[in-house]
Image (cartoon, rainbow, N blue to C red; front, top):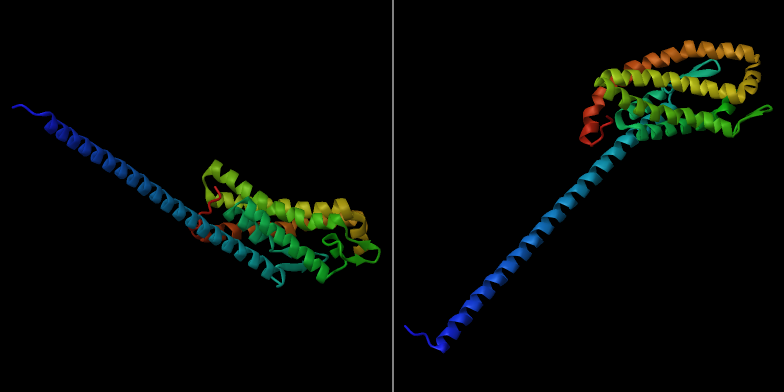
Amino acid sequence: MIMNKKNSCIIFSANETVIYLKTSISMISSKYLLLDSLYLKYERQEEKTMNSQKKRIQQLTLAAFFVAIEVIMSVTPIGYIPVGALSITTMHLPVILAGVLLGPEFGAGIGFVFGLTSCVRATMQPGITSFVFTPFVQVGNMHGNAFSLLIAFGPRILLGYLSGMMYRFIVRKTNNKALSATLAAALNTIIHTLLVLGGIWVFFAQPYADALNITTGALAIAFFTTITTNGILETVLAAIVVPVLTRALRPAAERMGIKNE
């Protein structure tokens, strides 16, 4: 069979058309798959962003809950229990709990709230020794200064931050969450007491003793007594309460993506 030139051109043209169509379809399919892949990637990114924003809102809500507790405790008798010139406080409990449960940064934030309420309370309801916690109060010739703010805020911020860091360190070493919470609560309560009393002694020993009408020697004995009585009670209270509340609140925190380990 002899194929003339005209028929050969027609067949060749048809083959070219088929190849062109196949190539076009292949390119369209590739572009479609690429667009589909990009769309799926965009959807996943949007979902991830939304989940991240949702968790962030939940975390801020939980932090606001701790702030509310701290503020409520500061204006009710359960926050400060007066004992002579000092007070037994339960205000340290939410701070330690926030540090252990939510992490050192959240703990430091709640510690700042503790310091703020302490400063405000000393300013709005001043006593004879309130000047050690606020620069806005003067008792006779004795008045607060910048060191008052350091005493009011510094130990409280460190209380929350160190609680979170110490819990994280201990739980990684022991893999025992209850023990880690107990030790972090107890040790940081002691550290907090020592920092507050130490700050008062370093910056205001004589004015503080004068306000109480005692000698600095008697003040040292009073501080030692406070550490061995009030301090021990606050430490035992923290060692009991914090692990219990941590265990109760941990599932909710983990659902929000918070895990201080």
